[in-house]
Structures are given as structure tokens and as C-alpha cells.
Length: 291
Image 1 (spheres, one colour):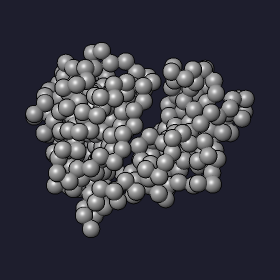
Image 2 (image 1 turned 180 degrees about the horizontal axis):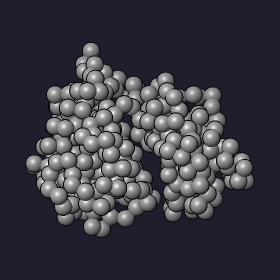
Image 3 (image 1 turned 90 degrees about the vertical axis):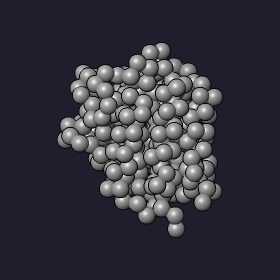
């Protein structure tokens, strides 16, 4: 069975589909690399490309995507509701098959060194690849970058057009959003504060509230960093309790990227409200098409 690493780069472009296509093509041109899915969000002005490759080629494929993004995306004119600092904003390596998290840490460091050397983009490491205890969490890395704290690799100053990049290694993460039937973003932010782990909410859950201008709605945007402890059902139910108390209805739910098969509960209410779900959303199904 072929050893595989997943990589899920987030790019600061969600309004020009052709730009995302060019980046995906650059990644897919590398031997063994297979693009499994793309998610484009115009409100966040952000896209997520999910791909897998063998550990021997995954850094090459990741670098190809980062390089193309640096050529096509200019952070000086970028606008969107999602926090971001770089054309390629985050670049996580995830063990999928026959690969350990420790190996992914080594791959992340190799990628960071290559990006800094070849593209002169400052690199910060996060999650399991972090070199400093105060840079494990992505939100802490963003604060470091915001105050221009010295990066882990590369020049001290932001790249003029490509900004900075955060590179890491982590277990599988589920990006899960719940859209609310209100245009009051303070409602989404209040709910996000209540349910997220760092405020005493659900363990392993990160959450922010965003305005969706294109839909005149708001969204609770979440990262489930350990879905086996806090899954989509638990996150949805926590939001449902808050919306019931506030008299707000839930419009829909959304998965960004792919999910493992065992993370889905097809009988749950959140599943019935999923936007644009298909069997292609399941990680294993997409991998089977490639290998």
C-alpha cells in the first residue's frame, strides 16, 4: 500500500476561480501528487486545496503550489473576512497512510526551509512543527506575525506581495461551518466565544464568527482539531442550544475540504443541512480514485 501524506494549503484567493485552478494545476503536475478537492469562498476570499502525495514528493508539490500562489496573489490588494497574512496562508502536512506525525514534522521543516530560501517568504512553524511553545496554536502565530516577531525561517520583513506563510504538521482537522439566519455578526461572534475550547467550551474546538456579505447572513466558522473527541454533531448541537436561546434559526451547515468517512453521522441534523454534500466530500473516496 502506497505511503501518503495529505497537504491542505489555504490560499488567499476565493473570487478568481482561474487563479485557484492554476495553483491546483501546478500542484498536480508533480509526480504522485493528486488534487482531491478544492473549496472556494468569496466572502472569506480564501480557497482550500486538498491534495495527497508520497512523502518523497509532497514537499515538491507543496512548493509548486506556494510558488504559483506567490506569482498570482498580491496581498497588498487582498480583502476578505478571514484572518490571513500570506498568499499561501497556512500549509499543514497531515499523515494519511503509512506515515507518522513525526515524519510530517520533518517534511514541514523541509518545506519551510525551501520556501524561505527559494522565494524569500518568511516562514513560521505551528502545531507539531512549532519550534517555540508560544507558536503551537495558529492564533498565537498570527499574533507573532502581526507584531513582526522574528520568523522561524527566512527574512525578517514580510514579502512585499506574498506576505508570510505558516507551515505545520498536525493530525486530521475538520473545517466545519454553521450559517445562521441573521445578518447580525455579533450573534455569530457571541456563539463562537461560548463554544470554543479556549473560552471553556467544547474541547478541541476553535471558532470565529464571520459576516457573509454575499448572502446577508452570518457564519460560525469552526476547526475541529480532534474530531473523535468533538465532532460535527457535538459542535452543531452546541450552536443549536445557543441559537434556540437567542431566537435565531440555523440556515445550513458546510464542510470545507474533505472529511474521513468515520466522521460523518448521516442521521444527524447537521448532515441534513449540509450544503453541496456529495460522496466526493469523503477523503477515502477521493484517494481511491487516485491510487
